[in-house]
Amino acid sequence: MGVNDSETVPSHIQKEVGSAYRVLNLGYIAGGANDFLEDVVGGRRLKDLNEQGGVAVYSYFSIHRERTFCIADCYREEWRRRIYLNNPAWNVNENYDITTTGTVLESRPAAENFVRQLFYNTEIGRLSQTFYSAELPKYKREYVKYLKALGKQWEKRNFKFVVYLVDTPQTPWTDNDLKILKESDINFIYFKRSPLFDQVAKAGVIPGDDHYNSAGNQFRALQIVEGLKQKGLLQ
Image 1 (cartoon, rainbow, N blue to C red):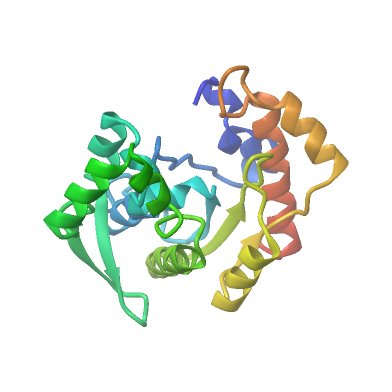
Image 2: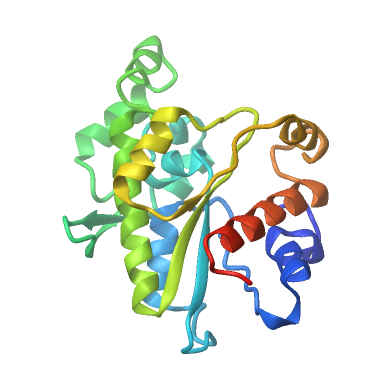
């Protein structure tokens, strides 16, 4: 968002790894894990992937949980409700197999949708966010189930699945977040905050926007490449 194709994270990764690897950008604008599940299950954009496999890297922003479950914040504006409530919803079983349950809107009781929308901008609605927040451990664990299911779908295509934790000044990853991920046995990349990160975070954001400029994307591309090398997935 907000940069040229040559300035995206995948483009910077391609520059780092050279012609020995083929890097594809399978990002979704304003998507959550539910959208990526739909994408890999349907295979709409994956027809030209070779059968030799590879590595699928999922960049995990904490805001993705809200986009996936449309818990509270997505009721803030009409366009958010129109997008996120119509995102696909899934049931994930204990083996991380999935079945579709329609859209987020269709998967909920009508009364729940009505109450959420009615009270969002009232004091009751604001208080309800204490109990319905994407930051609650319940939803973090539920999101991990989606990631495990996503990883299983990629493994069917002979791809290793790795989650990259995108750290931002506004949404740092806590020790409890990392604990949940470690307990889930998800293969993930994470670099602790550092003075360098804080400098890049300030200079790597598009003014007046939350998205990263080319420098910010390059920094994250370098982290992904380094993380994959440490895991033995890149030479």
